[in-house]
Image 1: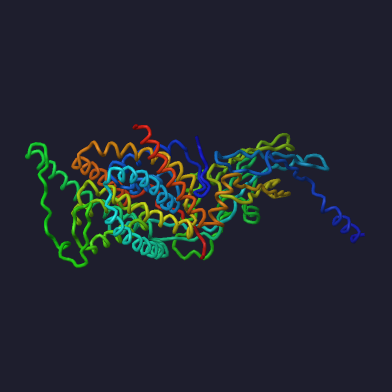
Image 2 (image 1 turned 90 degrees about the vertical axis):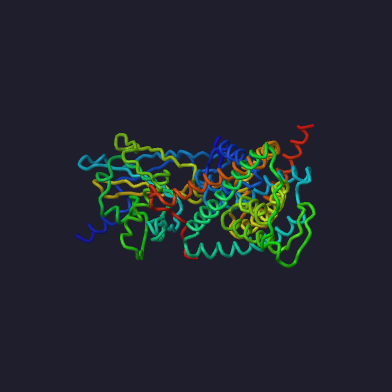
Length: 249
Length: 307
């Protein structure tokens, strides 16, 4: 009898009580010559087999993360009367962009243990191992502060609209100074701060057209690119000179 | 109008870049300096990554100098022979400069050294030029408007071997001092991301004793080739030349340079020199101020990687 009951539970497990169904306003971001940043609308619904449980609080967290890169954080100090870089800490992996939007204050939608496990808040996302400098935490804080100032790191508490515990939507604005790569949109569904479902999708951010062509040429055919840059420079210099002598005549 | 730069990977206002190019171009045409010592720090201030700013600036200087040198060639105010000697030194210096630059980069202190270089060189040259031109203007005032022909002093420069005749400059001197000037300018070009006109022009006047008339054209001639060489080095080793940024700067720059050259012809050499001296001192003061005063943000970010 007990075995039968266990089997029943095992069979029932894969079907979650609540699941995320997602939509994105765009499935890729194209960086063109006049790129000024872009808004991505993340919207979706929560699919249920059973009625809404009314005892616990539902939360939605949306994160968008750019490619991870190592970063060196340097600190200045006064030496011989001038300010120079004295200490540095290498952060092994920090996302080039990270936005986290929630449907309610972070404390209410996410428990610390869950944050530790899934790596959702900004300090948890940045990995720094083997830092030998004293007070290395302040270096990580400085990294977050600087990137937040450039709108590359965003914490948007309460920015997710959650309607009737079923429909949710939020807009994440990507600034103009984006790094190319696969951006990861990660949606977490929480109940009482515990993650009950997650959903990942990718948004490629790519240069297109002339931007793409120049970037590729500069990296694949550097010599040719250099010559082209010089040719343009000389042509512009000569052209201006010729145009001005015509004007003087 | 915002425009996205493919290599710098930032978005900036196109008119801001055109304007910056234009203003620096006017100064470049007036004084015969490439304008790099102004433009490179300005590009840092508007958020262009330093590596891209330095490399792209070299490319832009090629354009503004080319435009300027054509105007000077027409007026026959270029000493091609002297220019070639300076150029040989410049190419050697640029190569040495890149080696030195990469060594400093491995120490992680390259920015500080670039800044210190700026402060020391701009400070020295600015002060020297300022007092020299002040004296010249006073002398001119006493003589009733026209400056008396200054007799060139015989210094150590004239006692070196390997003498060569430079007809356009009216000089018969050893090739060693111009070669040395060329090397120094080349090193500075590679390290500081400048053409080096701000140091070459005073060196030509005060050290080599060249007539002021041919100094500007000849320095532009040398700068074109040294910066072209530097551009190629940056483009092939660091991939940091942003051609879109360069085009925007040089469209403003070449037009500015043409206007500047015409303004320069109308002004007296002493006035020109005192203006340049004041400008050099202003940039020097700003950079020194930045080093001495506690910055608002003590931390800065750099590219990581274990390579």
